[in-house]
Length: 424
Image (cartoon, rainbow, N blue to C red; front, side, top):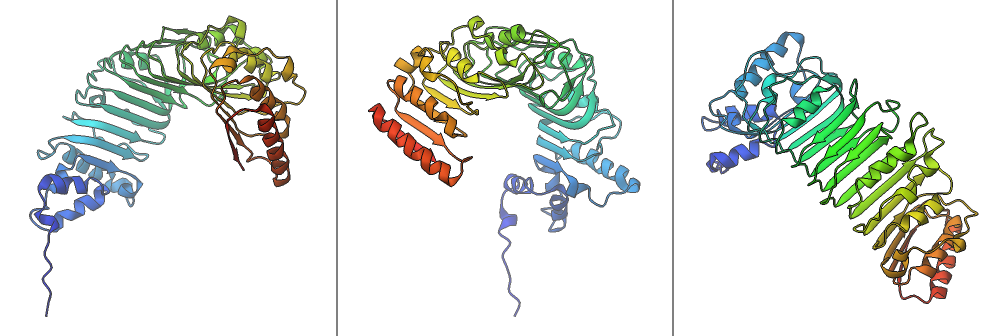
């Protein structure tokens, strides 16, 4: 006797069914149209459409045009009231020539070695809120009539830009989140970001991948909350006062062709109101990185309460660190991640005021045997220290056992009531 199975899913309201379909690859979503009359056109009303490698599998030169026509019909379907998110991930362009009445909140394109020019409608979509473009090696040229009045998030990855990128950004009047990741600015003398609404800005390149930078970085974003910069020293920096800045990640490398010392100092001066700073100094091939930030020329960081320091490849980094701590009078949390060189005379170094009055937690990553004297310096002078975290991942078991015993003895001798955390 045949069993009759009740179809409960089909009884769900159409909005719920469309939401379920939005999690499926577009091929699978379209295939549901054969289930019943109710399902026939539901796929055309889903709010999230994703075309990835799976969606494109099996396409030949002969039927690519047919697939493009399908995309066109899908985007212009009368049932497609609102497209919240469109994600394309492939090495071909899915648009045919012609205009589209594209209505979408988010577009995420991952197109390797894009040869086609992106359609102009992409940059005149008034409803667009998020635009993410990842086109490996593509040189973007943006139209002059950009109109993205509601765009709040704009991300680029692995791309090349000329001066037209500045025109694009200047026409995004409510932009809040801007990111350039592993991008290159060719034939550009200035990266000029004049966006009062901007809250998050990332300028992140592989250090030294494209050689010396030929441009000046200008940022006027008084409401910026998060700033990340990873690159060699540019030709210059002009940063407006960032009174709202909460967190900054700076990873920088000097070069010998310009005055790295003076220019890099201007960068740090521009973020003097930050509350949390992660600073990485890389030597690269520069002979100047030992003093890439001259502490005597730096401002006082009155708001800075969290500081993480990664010093790589330059001498006297321990002395530089203590000098910089003198510029952070209210520091509460200190994280250190750099190899300490034996021979530093820690006891001869002047004690920063933050150690005496405010520092409560210290974390030391990549701990080695040369750091015992540094730990002793902080235990002796951090008068209200509450927690010390030591990471010994890089040490052998024998070294860990010896170092652990030395640390316990130091803590005991300091007569401080603090929590010691040792990560083995």
